[in-house]
Image 1 (cartoon, rainbow, N blue to C red):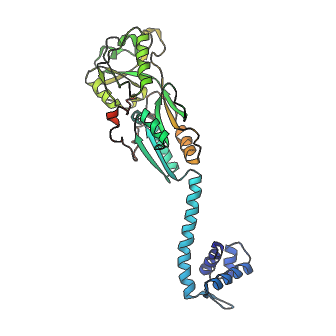
Image 2: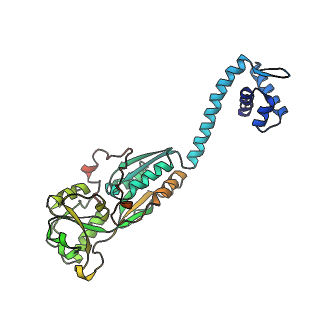
Image 3: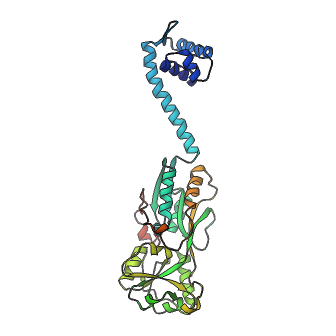
Length: 337
């Protein structure tokens, strides 16, 4: 028994006319009639009662028709699922992201991907840069969106998503809040709230080096892992924080953001802090339609970021299966970015 025979049989059973069934199947009538006869012989039952004017399904033919309809429908669906998977339109994609990505264009990119590929189960997992790299390496994540400053270890491929400057978050009543641009040297003596060095060593060291290049060693009396925690401490007057410019897209009462210059405000000096990148990262050598489709859609939202939500819109929630696994905060691996 062949699928072709079953398709011929179903066409005759639905049309109740051999000529129309043959045209529907794009074959001549004799081969179709021969296949029906061969099927009847194989099954040992008569499927149709034929006269010179009519064709009628026998009780056995009606029973087979119902089952074959369900069978062929399932086969067609299975074939389409396989093809959609090969096109990258179905499957499962496990995506890690740093918490500060929610303040960038990333949520819009995820929403666009969900619309483009509704058949893909997208699992979103909020976690830090170092933990993402370990999970990608072990195969527990397919792709990550993470902060990158000084390059990646061997074994990873990446594509830039966006890059942005770092700014200083100040208490609204702080004397420096009245400046349009804060000279980096003006932060001498201002307590800085930074994330622990173990969270993102390259960025932490770059901030310390920039401060020393401006002539002072920063005071860091308080550390905070999360960006929201940093901003809460700033609003409480504990100190200032160095944060990505995208933090501006989520205003917080009592906190103002100012650009940082290497020199005096009047000199128009270049930014005193290094730019920081958000990169899409995956295991080296992986090249499949699912990953390529994701990178094509999400990558189109990348570029430079000035810290404003796209088109002035409110950034939508990421949704999906997001969340930090137990113990990540305790391990210091969920970066403040």
